[in-house]
Image 1 (cartoon, rainbow over the protein chains, first blue to last red):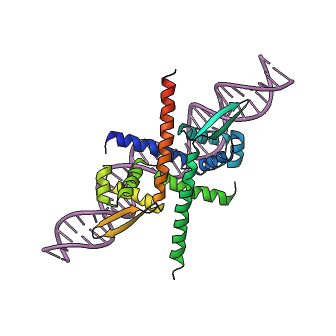
Image 2: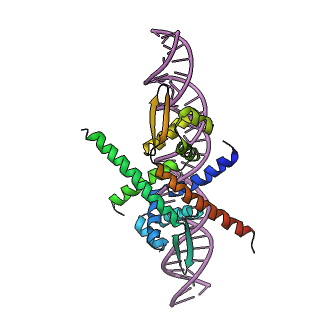
Image 3: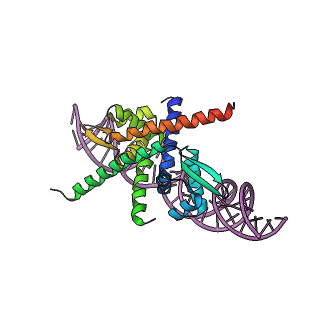
Length: 108
Length: 108
DNA sequence: TTATTACTTGGCTACTTTGCCAAATAGTGC
DNA sequence: GCACTATTTGGCAAAGTAGCCAAGTAATAA
């Protein structure tokens, strides 16, 4: 594998890494509905605000979300709505797995 | 956030986690073309075979790929081709980021 | 200016992931 | 049976990630 391929794969892997956390998926789902300030997302997630802020910065660095300061609050919104298309397939993968698990237990 | 939502998000995050590594992305890309045995993938990735085998087991546990033993070799193939749809959007995210970086440097 | 609110950053510990090596397993052929 | 090849598994050290607290920054308001 050459250096260019290596770099391309690492860049792509970073986008997946940014989405590979339950709290960050919740953030993306919520921002898909409408923009939210950090305090609202903190409330939903139920973690320390500093923790949520760090999750937001991971998503922002990956280029998935955007921030805008308005007064004291910082509002975040989805920058790349195409990531939502991922979710259908992920759901499909999970359903297939669940079905196979079920069939393993309930043998005919 | 209730326990059910928590569980749903954790399950989904696992699928993204499985894809969040350059070597595993290469594996998915290659298996999208055709099935490959572990030795071929090891050759492409250029790591220890035990390392590649562990990457394959991560993808298999996530339900993304399938294995089939034929003689001495184990052949892997893509089980959920829908994950390939992710790649277009990831490419879009990366291009947008790159363009913005470029504009930051080359101010008008 | 000081106080207050909303958020981010630094620092630390606990936990997880990665990758190599060595050992174990499973087929094949003699 | 034995040797050989392809793959998986266990164990360990190094690197990376997550989350909390405390300290820092920035906007607002008194």
